Length: 91
Image (tube, rainbow, N blue to C red; front, side, top):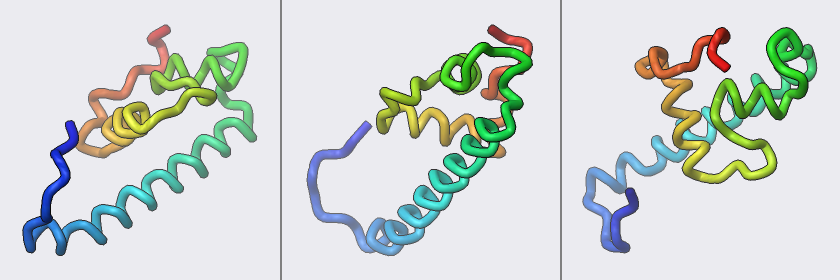
């Protein structure tokens, strides 16, 4: 997935700040929404704990969240990737 360390092209240098900003904003938005889901307790109708909900719904463990999990979550949260989201009915 990652490229070896090398000099960025002019296009990559131009894209980099924008891409970092988009990722940062997306992570912050996901954190806010997850906090809201936890705060309101709307996970209770389908799961015993918020942690179980996150794992079942999004496929990540809050205690072991890593870069790969964030990338998968970001892909699932993308409007273009909406069909990848698990339905509420799935275990």
